[in-house]
Amino acid sequence: EVQLVESGGGLVQPGGSLRLSCAASAFTFSSYAMSWVRQAPGKGLEWVSGISDSGGRTYYADSVKGRFTISRDNSKNTLHLQMNSLRAEDTAIYYCAKVTTYRSDYWGQGTLVTVSS
Amino acid sequence: DIQMTQSPSSLSASVGDRVTITCRASQSISTYLNWYQQKPGKAPKLLIYSASSLQSGVPSRFSGSGSGTDFTLTISSLQREDFATYYCQQSYSTLVYTFGQGTKLEIK
Image 1 (spheres, each protein chain N blue to C red):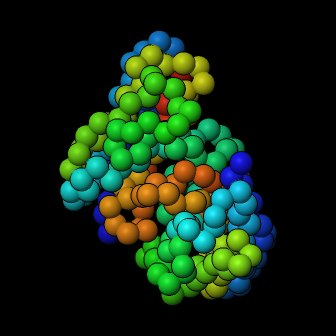
Image 2: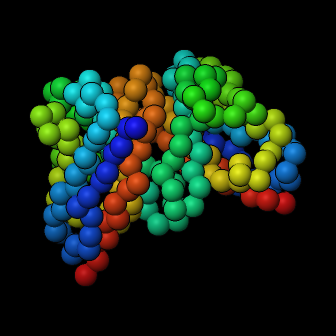
């Protein structure tokens, strides 16, 4: 069964950095685009970033452009999100999701990022 | 960026009711429209993709329709387990898959 397991969340001070990871299993990771989606407490879903299957193309929401970097290691079946210059408004649960033909068909359980002093 | 607007933001209904949720895109997105269900404390679950295709394992009481800018999600006969928040998502823009603001479906 497809599994996506996020890690790396935690408490960080404003202006700090954090690196999230998403370990994928039970599918050919290198054949699929991936994305990060976040959800602030009590709020809706916000698409954050996407990356092509090879990693050659990356996309970002305006709210994180220039601060976040998505990457992947296809040899290790792992997706990453490097988050720099973190702000209070980045506080959210961060989900990784597998992208299959224009839809996100599998999601991880999420990892909580809290930005606070 | 393409903006997605759902209505209503919240909805009260009873078991057995027929419910419709609407999603409008700020520009034409053909049928690049997905619907997700999210329950408290859980990850979103894909229900409908390409506007009207039912994801494997999803009950047939869920259906989707529309194209261009206007889309609907219909639940033909609400079951207790359907009370949740529903989100539409456009996938027209390459890997920039924005969501609507969500519709919370509550028990009347």
